[in-house]
Each structure stands twice: as C-alpha cells, then as structure tokens.
Length: 187
Image 1 (tube, rainbow, N blue to C red):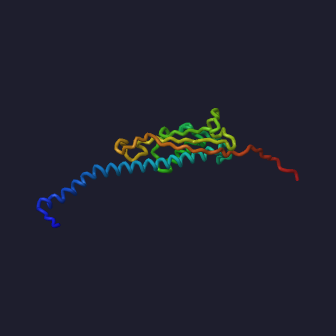
Image 2 (spheres, one colour; image 1 turned 90 degrees about the vertical axis):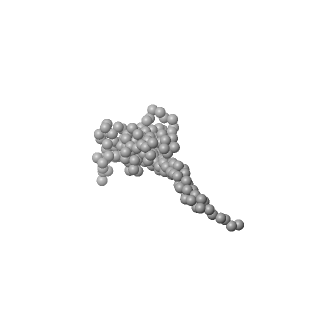
Image 3 (tube, rainbow, N blue to C red; image 1 turned 30 degrees about the vertical axis):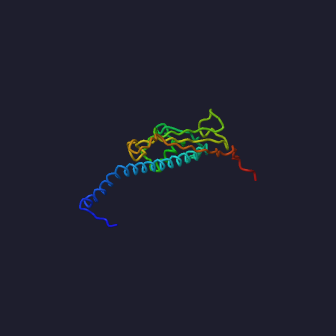
C-alpha cells in the first residue's frame, strides 16, 4: 500500500515529540525523585544497622580499662555535657558510628538508644551490670527528617517514613572474676 503524506501530517510530526516530552516530565521526574529518596532510606537503614552493631560491640565488654589503667563501667547513655571524664557509653559509640558514616548533622536528641537484657532482667539497665554470656539487645532509632533525607519535604518523595530503627542481639563477653596475686614467689 502506498502512503501519501500531506503537508498537515508533516507539521504534526514534531508536536508528538513535544507532547511526549511534556508528559514525561510529569511522569519520569516524580518517579526518579521517589526512587532517589527510597534509595536514601535504604542507605540510612544500613548506617543505623551498623551503628547498632557498634553500640552492641561496646556494650558486650561490660567494663573497659582506661589509658590510666583504671577499670571503667560502660553505661547505656550519658549526656555529653555530663560526661566530663569521657566515660564509655553505648549511645556515644552509636553517635560516633553515625557521624563516621556521614550523618554528622545528627544531634543527641535525634537518636534514641535502648539497651535491654533478653532474660527478662529489668533491674539491670546498663551493660556493666551483665554477666558472662547473658544475652542483650541494643535498639537504635533515628528520626528520618531533614537532617538525613535528601528531600526536605517528605510529601514530594511520597515516603511517609518518620524514623528508621535497627535492633542487634548480642551476648555479654565479660571476663570471669579473677584475683591477681601480687606477692612474688619465694626462691
């Protein structure tokens, strides 16, 4: 079959391309922004998971020795203003991990850290109170707001995420109690 083109159809050929481009701006751009923000949420979730593991790794020690040779108890959280002696605490380890991952803009109030023993013990609330092989969890919750999301307005991306969290289960690795005999043996 022979197709005959008329001058009117030749003029319309460019209009379809322009209409397609205009429509794609309304379809493709929001799709790309949504994928971009969803990828950021996955990235932040991985950072929170890593921070929870770092906090649990510190908590598992129960106690640590300072550079001066003094045993120090590891606490769950100590406000930075009150921690003048740089006592180790789980929340500080979590904050350092998040800052090292690129989330340096987070404030102390933007991150919640919960430490609990899994055996039902409710009177012990700090890692130094644990015993050898006692199970515990460290839960980290980070507010998913303008400090961590790429888009400041959550309505643009379509993601209704308000926080990201991760829980790590671990066991206490404290040493068995021992006594050092400081007396030299008689020769």
